[in-house]
Length: 189
Image 1 (cartoon, rainbow, N blue to C red):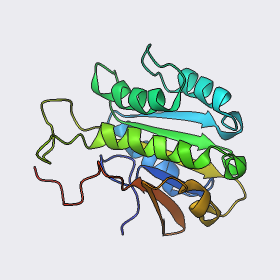
Image 2: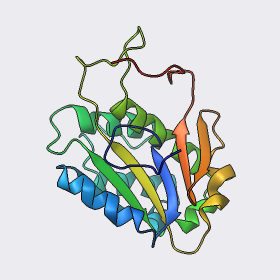
Image 3: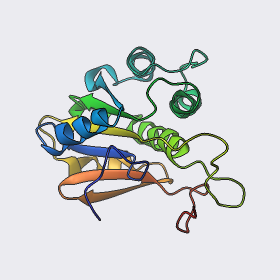
């Protein structure tokens, strides 16, 4: 598998990597050059559900109807992209993410991020084709930046939900969705 990208509407949706990984600033700059945006959150503010939802509300410009629950976060991440957002492509960088390794909600959090990104990136119609009439495909990715923890340590805790699949790629841990709504066949144009 190639290195992940922040500029294209493709998997993986979530990446765990070292904070000093040169891939991150290079990809973030490419995204900005293409008209995308980079939001930064502090992982230390994401250790419980309430502060996590508040941080996303404050730092990611979610729609006004965001109600601060997991389903609303997934839907709001998708809707933030498709309906009048000034910047369609977005990477959310989560600094100081090490402490999230022990958060009870980490697996659910990663699953929600994957779901929201998958919906923003790859909306599929009932026949399994890209739904080009619904909304454009937009890059939406999340990067957990680790100060001291090896990304591989997150493999089990990040994949506690059955629809999340993790893989170690070039020293980075990637996560994507593999649930029943995810197409198993290659996308058709």
